[in-house]
Length: 156
Picture (cartoon, rainbow, N blue to C red):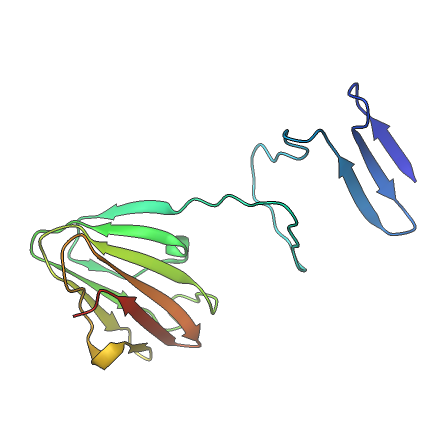
């Protein structure tokens, strides 16, 4: 085992060779681990026993067409075009969103927000309706299986 101690009593970094794990003990209310730059990838499960804070990435789109990209997963997209926008939800061969991915769309502009299925994809919705009913309301798109999306919210 290897332990690094800080100047703060009780704070340490321990490599426990018998359990093959790194244990970070910090001060309550302060960051014990901070990644200044770069991505963090977790191959197996992540268990959180405290609280988590997540912020949506808010994206403004004033175009008339959009096919979501992987970077749009978990985003909140404001559609602001005055005459409308069509969002094409892609099939896996075009954009491989993981099952469970979600995107929230707000009809922020005066134009109609319409959803369409990409070639080889399916979009399910209440009554088969593929439009957002009112300005300043939302519709969420969730990828529920390979090539299948469900939209829900203020549809109409």
